Structure formats: C-alpha cells, structure tokens
Image (cartoon, rainbow, N blue to C red; front, side, top):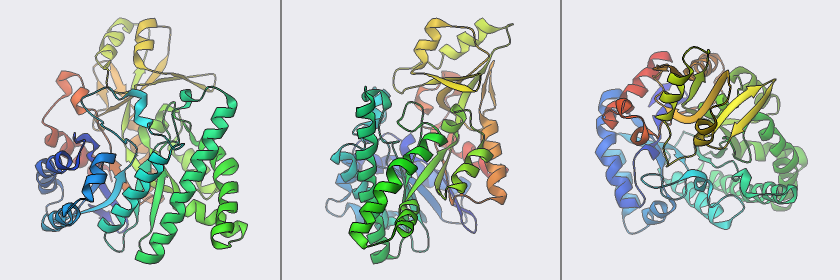
Length: 397
C-alpha cells in the first residue's frame, strides 16, 4: 500500500508455501484479499511477490500471466517488489545453506533472475519503480580458497552486470525503472556494509565500466552511474543488526559512495543478553528456536570484531560465556521481548525514524517467513499475524 507519496509497504509472500505456480497462486488467493481488507481497505495494496524458479516458469504457461493480472486488478492489488533470493522450495523441508543455490556463479541463477524481471515488467504499474532482492552472490563456505572466492566475486559481478544491461533495455522499451537489490546476510559472500562497498569498488564498478563501454560506448563516469542505478542494496534490518551495524551509519556509508537502497526488508533478529543470574533459563528458552529448516547463524561482537557461528546448534551445544548474542531467526516484528529473550526491534525503530526525514528507499517489505517454525506459543493464525505486523509498522511510520 502507498503510505506516502513515494513509500510503498507490503509483506513478502515467501511466508506462504508454494513450489509451483498453482500452489503459489492458491496461497495468495487464500490469504491476501483478507489481509488487504483489514490493512488497506480503501486503497490498492501492493504485493511482495515470491516465485520459485518452477513457479516463475509456469507463470508463462498458457493464460497464467493474464489470469494473474486480471485477478490483481479485480482485487485492487499490484506488484512492485519481488523476492528472487530462494530459487527452490522454501518450506516444509531442509533449506539451510541451499537457499543460496544455484548461486550467482551459475547460469541458472542468471536465467531465473532475468525471467523474474521480464515478469515484473509486465506486472509493475506505470509510474512505480520495481525491485527484486537476491542472494549476496553465494554462500561463502562453498569456496575454500582465496582464488575460489575471488572467482565467485568476479563471475557473480559479471552475471549481475548482464541483468543491469537487461534493466537498461527494459527501461528504454517500457519506461519502467527496475533494480536488482543485493541482500547481504550472515555467511553470505557479502555480510555487511564494508563487504558491499568492497564488491562495488573492486568488482562491480571496474567490470561494469568495461562492460558498458563495450555495450553502449559509455565513459567511465556514465558507466559507473548506470551500474549503481540498476544494482542496489536490499537493506534487511535483521541482517544488518546481526552485523552490529547502526542504520544511520550504514546508510551514510552507502550515500557517500552513491550506492542506492532498492528495498528495506523489515525484520527482527533474536537478541540474547546474559546477566549472569538466569543464564540457564535463557539457554532453555533459546533452545526452543532450534529447528532444522533454516540456517540460524549466531553473531557476537568482541572488541569491535563480529564473530559468526554458522548455526544455532553449535552455540547451544557449547554454551560458552557470552554477554550478548544475536541469532539469525526472523521473529515477529511487533515482538520486543519473548520471555528472557529480546529482539532487535530497536533497529527497526531506528530505521523507521531515519527514513522519515531521509527517504532512502521507496520499498518497505515485512519479511517474517518463520511462522511455521516458531515456538508453539508464538504461532497464531497466519493472516492474523501478518495483519498484526503490518498494523504495528504502520503505527510507527
């Protein structure tokens, strides 16, 4: 929904199971009209659409696209952002590090993303910009040597630049501006703002200058501007809180380098604060979040350096001495505290306060995809939970 002149709020439909187009569309039809009625009854409601590769392929079969567009129009809905990070199934089976597969070193990831942009160009209303969030190149532990890592950076950048060229062409033919939004996260090849800046300065920009010089005959400054126009950052609040970064400082770093924020994903991580008096209670409550579907990296900042544990079971097994841990577990954004545990909701509030006077992005997308794996007493009716999150966020904007 449109909250201000150029600010659109939605939630990501990756919360709804759906491996193929039929099941994806059925989930959207089941939940979205009722949610819209409660949170956006008097105006159009935007979707943060997530399509698996299979669902995206099947959307192009027969009348599926026209049927979907007609359904959107009939229900006063529109699509302005998509989640192109998970390629395969995202629910009801082990996902873990395979959420990155296939990664940006592969043609499969490139083809999937380019198809999503073709589809978004059909769905996106005129006058709006559109974005698709994507993997931070690859999962860093798949690349064992420095040479393998550098190769992943290089190939990933070259593939992303092909998408940038596609977006340049689509804007020229349709008049619609769209952007690829790279989403840093723990144990991705890009985890934090410094690594994003490094990727732009060492790979995207230099390779992009050569690429657009060959393709379009552009000079260095024009080519760099084009790279940064079409390849942007998805600022996932949960992920940057896990990097112990303050929103104001991170946005300032991006602005200084003319790096755009294509989308802000509104999400909260678990925060675990130890005080030496109830540690066993804390460990017990934290163990309720140990589940086998997703990776739940845990981070800790010691002497200014962020250390990452690759998954929650490692921390629960060792139960070392800690002052504060943060866990990559998307918890309801309206939840400031859960028993003896906390959330990083404060980072959401800081981000919201910042964008009120500094509109760094036009896209806000709530992304709590973990409802089906939360501890039992946090599980409620799915639509009711989504409505509660949207209303909580609206109340702070």
